[in-house]
Length: 62
Image 1: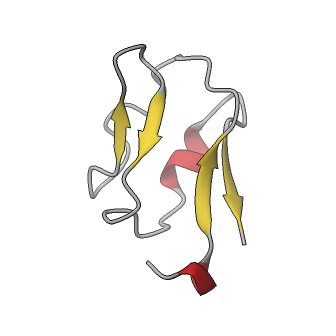
Image 2: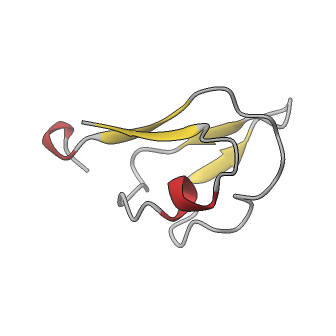
Image 3: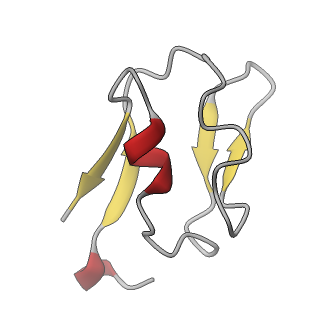
């Protein structure tokens, strides 16, 4: 992923678990508090996590 493509940010994750196992490349990971973190080296911007998040906490930024 390059900066020109944009990236996904986590804003206000409520730890609902809806995005668990949705990422085909394993780019989503939970930290010790259950908050989602994104491994940008693995993220392909498939947007599956953005689509599944009911809280709109995963946001695509250009």
